Image 1 (tube, rainbow, N blue to C red):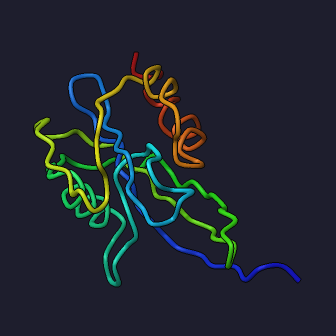
Image 2: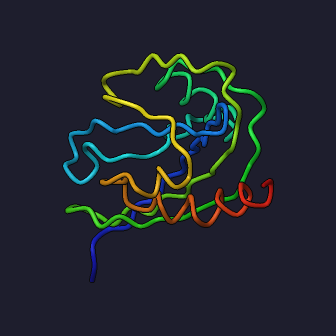
Length: 146
């Protein structure tokens, strides 16, 4: 018999400004997640819609207000943690930033970058699943607009 299985739901924002999108570097007590690059987002609160979650999480983590989020799709990732297997359902949204002034919540992220898709792929130490989610849900839409 394997480890217990836990499922959570999160919403993330691929936030765009002037041809680039925002990535943040995570601060975490969990060593496998500490100093890993990803996009802003987090767990849904009870009674909160995915769109409300992405707006709240982006604002809490970065100080950014965003325009209308567009749902790109749902991505699922499994993390093998010491005490359980965590299956995360990730609602990925694309949204414009209303400005580019970042005010990081230093308890969640310690730095940020505005990147192109190629620059994103070149960054080292992505959070597990982030590259795959971007390739599956965001990159095809971005290329379709070019």
